[in-house]
Image (cartoon, rainbow, N blue to C red; front, side, top):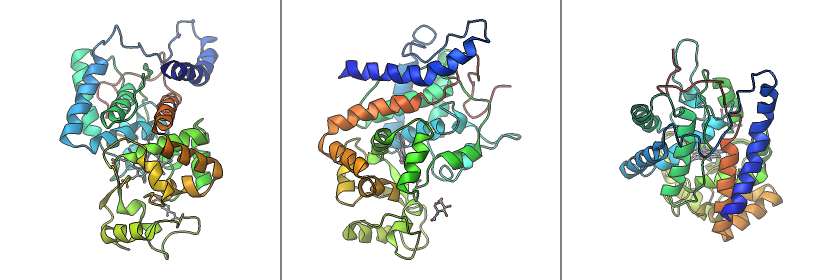
Length: 337
Ligand code: HEM
Ligand SMILES: *[C@@H]1O[C@H](CO)[C@@H](O)[C@H](O)[C@H]1NC(C)=O
């Protein structure tokens, strides 16, 4: 299994990374041979992965939800002009932080954990480990610590010197998106239906605010396209803490059965119409192809884990900055001077 996963990852790397590299080598002096590798910091910062892991473990023991929050950051970073830590930048001058986008505001969290990791890495090996790579490592470690699969993280991404609030709003789908909208937005990033289904499996951990799924609970809210197939008892239970108005920020488990364990219960929930978000349930109700994937992952956790690891590697390879592009930020919240 490990071997076939490795080949697959390499194939993906060559697709995503090598094409832009070849284009740049013709104009370069040929020195820019950089690409992502598992061994990127082996000499320059051999303890990097160990340090990141220890901070994730600490953050998780202080607050188990943090694993979910950290995993999500990598996704919200990669979907906005590639995995380049643009998400981490605060407002400054003309730079408009992505933290204020519809999906991030009052929702994305864990930035302090990233700050602490970066600061420890700057002490260990100054200006060496990028914030974008920290997000990729933290996503893997958060998956593992909650009981999910592990994978080798490709490293060597560099950090952007800009952010895009507009791209954050445009590229990351909302919870009321239609099924075809989800597929399209994933396709735009080079991710297919199999990736979508597997990656959505990360909703096996973490929380959602009432605000993000309220429209599903009340017939007179939301639009025609919303999935209304929610189990009635489940809906009544949710209505208790998520009234027709107010309590927007109340938190609910995305997986009501095993909310802090990375397992395949998310897919089992979809099969019994107990998916929390509209965008979760549509995976089961709107397409026979994705319904087959839901059934497969609900029956076979191993198959889910294997695909999740592959799809995370694939997502982590979206348009990285390499070579002399971008920079290694000293502080993840702002660009270097
Ligand atoms: C397919 C499109 C997706 C949609 C529409 C979506 C939507 C959402 C929403 C609405 C929330 C709750 C936010 C809130 O109310 O504060 C959430 C949470 C979360 N999402 Fe997604 N998501 C998607 C894909 C993904 C992917 C690809 C990942 C990771 C690979 C992911 C990981 C998470 C995690 C772990 C949480 C919980 C975070 C926490 O507890 O802090 N999601 N998502
Ligand atoms: C979908 O959700 C977004 C973001 O929360 C919101 O701005 C928009 O009005 C919603 N659209 C519909 C049709 O409910």
